[in-house]
Image 1 (spheres, one colour):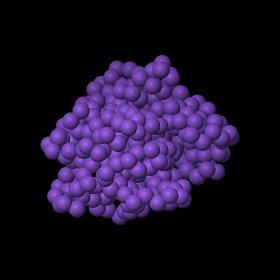
Image 2 (cartoon, one colour):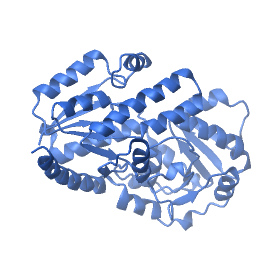
Image 3 (cartoon, one colour):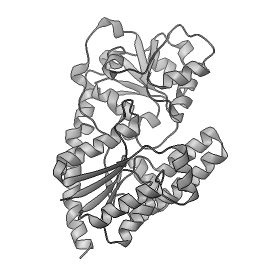
Image 4 (cartoon, helix red, strand yellow):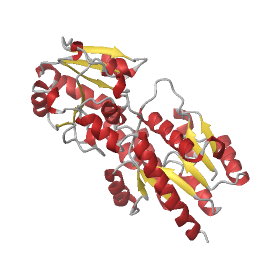
Length: 360
């Protein structure tokens, strides 16, 4: 079986959640079909200018005319069983494949209409409004013309049905390899909790809220890592004795070895939270909001909080013995790469039989 895998570049040194999942998707396809059967086409991470041109000239998100022509040429000249689109913002190219009788699989990192609506609510600018409309149009085409649609969780499946009256063919959660062996048992992490993440809008919103409303009232040292630190240093005017900012870290093992548990005060967004899955892969409990646990059953692996008072109470009364290895057990059973690979393999095999019937 031959697959053309189309994605924006995911080879970043400081990767955010989207890049981590993109790399995971590629690795799963390599394991499933073998390197000789995967034709990878990656293009540069879109700039604001390329995204704006895409909006103005009705091209796919961040796709230049040159990239569009290169992809179409590969599709026409190739003999692929599938074209895999690593985003739901390739609506025009997916329609092009449908018109040419070429089978497609599309991976929805989010329901982008929901995600960009949250971006618009957060920034309230003219540009974010027009981008919200733009991605909604592209994603609608992806739903209409994709032969197989993959989403991350039940919430996204319900959102797809609500927004586009279409259901996905597969729910495939974020997954990764185990990191539990990287965790060291030491006393220095006792009394410490933390957050690690990029400076994307949902992290900015959640972290400023947490630092203002929760941090002054907890009895723990709070450790923050990732590019979110650059943003916080610019915005915070007060000094917090129990706040430690590590900044960008070369090895996330260092962060997870410095805390007993993580907090995830995220209220906006779509899809799943990569950092929640990452924490569980280290066997680390999570105290977070409903959004932080989308696609994850929080029972026995963490605590659900939606208000400042709930965060304060759960953090101040945290007891590591309560979790007794459950976070990693949950990860191993539901979110490990090996488990998700089996699910994808079963789906592709069934999908292939369905495709053969459909295109006869």
